[in-house]
Image (cartoon, rainbow, N blue to C red; front, side):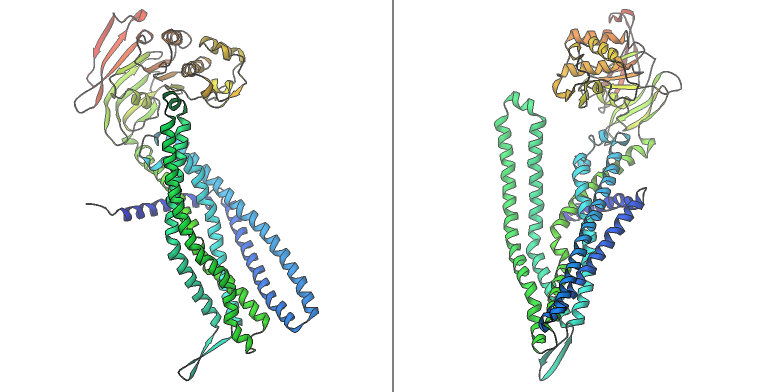
Length: 605
């Protein structure tokens, strides 16, 4: 049955907002709650002080203009002294208010960013999210940009809305107290309207807000479409930067330029829509800016002329009328910012929802996921292991195998049989499936992908990444570099650079092997880790598994010829009916690793 898309989007948006509120509100209930409440109450208190100063300024209008009407020089002098004091109080309060408001924004954002980043990096979600759907895509932008846009405006909105409500109540009270009575002749009788300025202020605000809303509603949609075009242009530029070498080598400059120009043309069209709608809004905004201060003077003029209202009362009423307009129009004036905030909060909520869904399918339901545990002995064991896609489709079915300490296993199989997925499951990166992977208690595992990760910083840091072990001597680091054919880098241990850009693909794989030599792990898991090396270099590096790394258990995926001689056993993955793969054959390589002499053992798993 088809589903109404708008309803689905609305429900999804509401759910995302609830996710955001649930997590973001933790700042006021968690370990940082004392600081959170202190900053919040401080900001609200200063908002009240600001309101009190504004009421004081409003009363000053009445005092000053009444003194001016009486030509009372002494009172005028007192009025000058009072306004100077009010200005000083307003400035001091504003400074303190800015400090409190911005500190609250910063600390809330800091807390939320820490929470999101922690959840993202915990349990290797940062990797697992790259495999699932797009709901948690671009987590770095959601954590950095959207978290800022979802917290900073919200502080402004909550304080602004509170201040607007208090201002509306306070200054409507002022208008009621000084507004007098409007007498209107109706059918030979007189209709008396007490506090008529209050009703006039509310009617005026509703009219201005209504016009602003109906004329400005298309502007919100246009601004949202413009932001989408901005994101598309930014994506195109980022994609070119990330693939600069490949694009340059194949001569794709003109095509990429055309794509970027097309993206900017889309952005320009949407910007023009924003400009047109903004121009329509300007009619209402500018007209209101001129009329709002004049309207109360016109409305109060009859009372002033008949003597029921003094000049000071008239000026006080005019100032109060403007403050009421500002208060009652607050939501409309902030409609665009509210729409932008909602979009950012929903994107953060989507990331939170992606974390929750991942936990539901992986972390909280251990019976339905691959369990990493401790082996009862010093062997690496696979017991009743089935590996699935994130959508539940089985890739590898019910495997059982045991690896002895120091054994070197080569995994082979046709494309798509699940070799790399098996490697990721063994490394603890792939939780989807069932069964157990049992590693010796306390065993340290090193993972060598086809493209090693090399952090920015010194070569020493890159060589000892990810750390956690005692610092090694320069002699040990240089020895590892020499053994792996990186002797040219021996004098650059302290050099700071982006080594992933300086080193070639083969040199990066050499550096990964050097990491193994400087800090030999118990288990090495490799995925095409020699693909960028020539055969001589591959032989040189792989030979260390017979020497320095002889005690390490090795599980590797590779297609290149010549790898068999460095492994003691081979596992072949083959597809069976239904598309599932299984461990169909083990080959055991005997002494001197000659392929001609092996014992083939068939396993039905």
